[in-house]
Image (cartoon, rainbow, N blue to C red):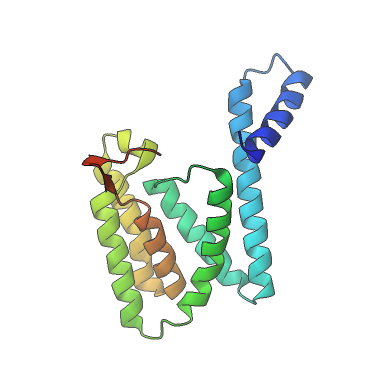
Length: 180
């Protein structure tokens, strides 16, 4: 059991005890609280670090772009919330710094095309993969990525690439790793 689960469980038990007749079950409350805790930590720390480096707006753009694409297409998950939180904070803050080294619009274009190809081939992932209309998810993800052909943001190009890399299936021992 991890720290965020324990904290969310503690809070859910207190909330549930205050109103035991509420129709939302304890596990659902716990999951929702754990999600809010993780997102709050990621967003607060990422924006705080972004402010320290003078990149808060770029970090915010990366957060929105990455999160929107992930919401639509899904993606692989880490086995622990701590790994997810730390990696996401590092990623959200590293992308604007890396984007400073992309000086040519052609580079942004190539990275965006790469993201579009990965999305088209591998989306959807996770729970979204049970949806029968895969082509709609691919189209929606592709449309989000395609916005960067107009905006031409190196930060968004890198953020989209990182997100689409979480869609890629890796094979171990001859079978697809299906752990989400």
